[in-house]
Image 1 (cartoon, rainbow, N blue to C red):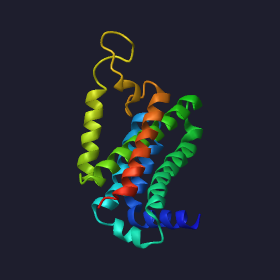
Image 2: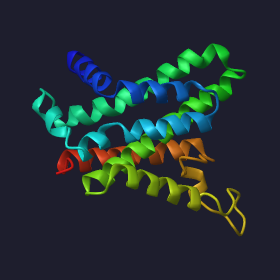
Image 3: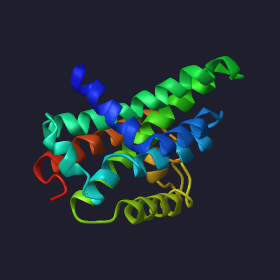
Image 4: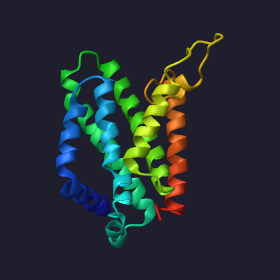
Amino acid sequence: MKKFEMYVRKEFLEKWGALLFFVVVILYPGFQSKAFGTFFLVLFGLASDLKTKRFELLANLPFKRKEIFLYSYFFGIFLIILTFFVSLPFADNNWKTLLDLLKSVNFYTFFFSTVLILVCYGFDNVGGAFLILFANLVLSSFGSQRFTYNFNPYILISPTRQANIYLATAFAFFLLFVSFKVFTKRGGE
């Protein structure tokens, strides 16, 4: 636990302004605001450290690559869950709020994974994130989630639509596994 505390302290010292702003945005009820804040948390997370060459500073601390990946991921999850519990007393419907939490975790996991994969292969973290977001919005905007002639299966797993929460969760965690493998092998080098 000491290493995780050291990682959290490092994140707050370096990025306190951005973290504070986007945590306040995540506090606002509804999935759209949580997705907006979560998207920018991903941009200022580990992918940003890799792109701006701050990863070497992290690597000089007593962290292994696996630990850096896991600490970064769980730090974002911690912020999402913390804002969930802070805003829970103000929620109208606790079940919808719980579903928003799960959707936010899926959204964060999807974008954390895909942006990290892109950065490890040399893409820019901001450009890659917006490219993925744009592609996701386009792919999930046409078709239907019903099994008819215009069925679009991507709507079921899309991080912005999440028509089937179980498939979206499975897809997001599959991408997390892939990004873990890519990051521990390549590491943005």
